[in-house]
Image (tube, rainbow, N blue to C red; front, side, top):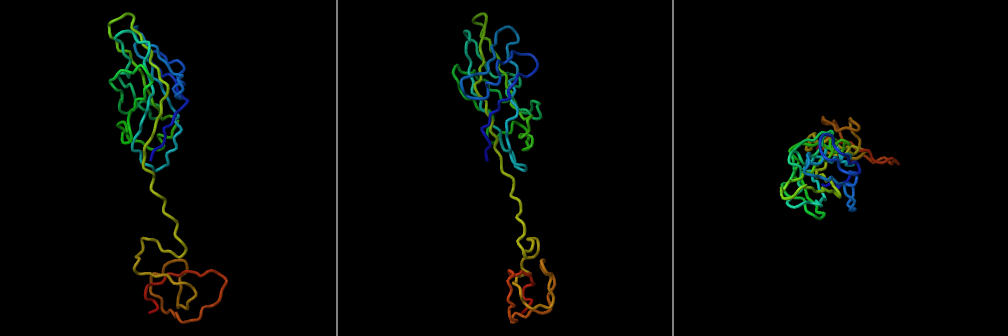
Length: 247
């Protein structure tokens, strides 16, 4: 099964060194309003992490997580001659568990294109090198992080470029939890008891001894199946007797 693609309006700049993303919340929707990090050859030549949390997943408890997929709609503009923008080299694209960056770095060693293009990270069978529970993914602290880096071409000065993100989505692939066992119908024995030793008979029958609401484990003394049925407005009661008890 697949949950998503989901988006989140909760984007912010991560801590540490790097150029801030302007209006990081613009990574929420594909509407041509973009989160931007304007990079130059003056260090640092990379952005801060763009951090998105609280994805609104509701994976059922007991489900088995099979894969996580991120799709990033991004572009690079205002590039000087020979200059590129790429995913950050060190831990450029990762997930967050409990608000901490974890798992494999999914960065791709390709230049961001000059027009809006969706790049896919992970997939239906990709767990990013980790194991996941539904509770971890449903948590507000489950997140996605990314930073961009300017790759210098040394053909002009100054070297500049604008990393821009229009939208980021996440999808989660999972196997649903096993179904809950259904309650036993009235007069039905649990499956763990030996099926071959019991049979169901409808009341009323004249019997020597009866055990109500449970299968009878021992042979009843007598069963007279020729006795007249007594009229009653109540629905028949079901008793479980050993097979052949009245033979």
